[in-house]
Image 1 (cartoon, rainbow, N blue to C red):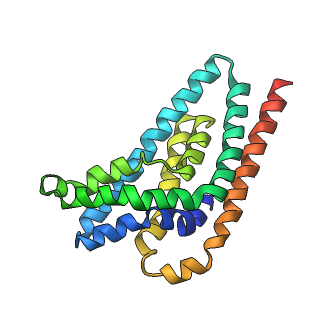
Image 2 (tube, rainbow, N blue to C red; image 1 turned 45 degrees about the vertical axis):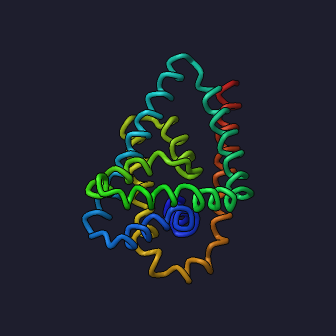
Image 3 (cartoon, rainbow, N blue to C red; image 1 turned 90 degrees about the vertical axis):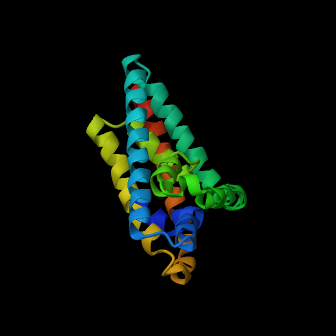
Length: 200
């Protein structure tokens, strides 16, 4: 629900322009499908890396430290998304999308643009991705970790695929994203509580 809710607001206004750029270049359905497929694969890879990093820290009996750091991170992240979200969007629009246009216009890479850019997009700075990576770090199993990232990636598809059609309606509900940002903050405090509980 968090991924779907924020995909219809935060994700679309931060990354929806990428799909518009693909449409601008008259890309076919296959290019767009490969873009999303490789983007979600990148999320899964990141989730697996995060899980094994968390597993390593737990093996060193640093679980309390891990929960507290991730909790504090989520709290700071939630406030950063509320306060600095528009600044980050401006930076992406001014710099990232310009680079994308150069990439899409490059004849040498245009054939693989869906796969290459989709995978690289998975590693773009994104507060929402950071949140789900934090969840993967404390997952109970490796399956939970990669499924966490897979479900997040799938939940962003409706906005990424259909957002350009309903953009005016999405703008009307854009402020609801702050509710989801607040949930990230609450989750951060919950992790800090778990850290305190474990320390006892």
